[in-house]
Length: 167
Image (tube, rainbow, N blue to C red; front, side, top):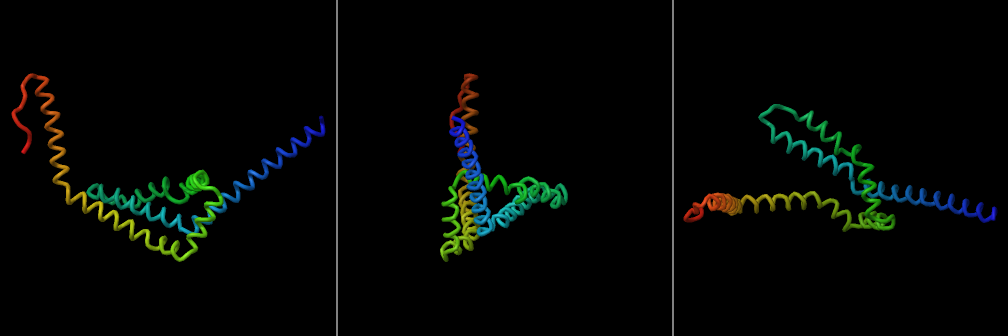
């Protein structure tokens, strides 16, 4: 019985060490992927975009660029987000899948995807913006109709229905 108990303890200790080793190698794979796809640089660009958006929205209030940049970097910069992003990738992808991604990004197509993704993202954002601006009169009409429907319900509740909607 004592031999069996000792053997079980040894097996459990080895299994625990193996899990830790697998977690460490999984983390190393994610870190390699992040180095390859320049995740720190991507997150830094996000910080810059957020800072520009926030400071341009409050431009009339003064020059808060440095303060906003420090704030955004503190909470969503690479140092702040690294461990959370690694955990997210480890929980989403197996270690083998991470290494498959690393292998893909080492191919010409993978390198091209990394190179072209920012421009594609900007083109998509510009297209979305253009479509929304182009069709903004429709949104305004929909909002007016919604306002009128609310107004109509209020009037009907008071027993006085309006004759027609907005034109």
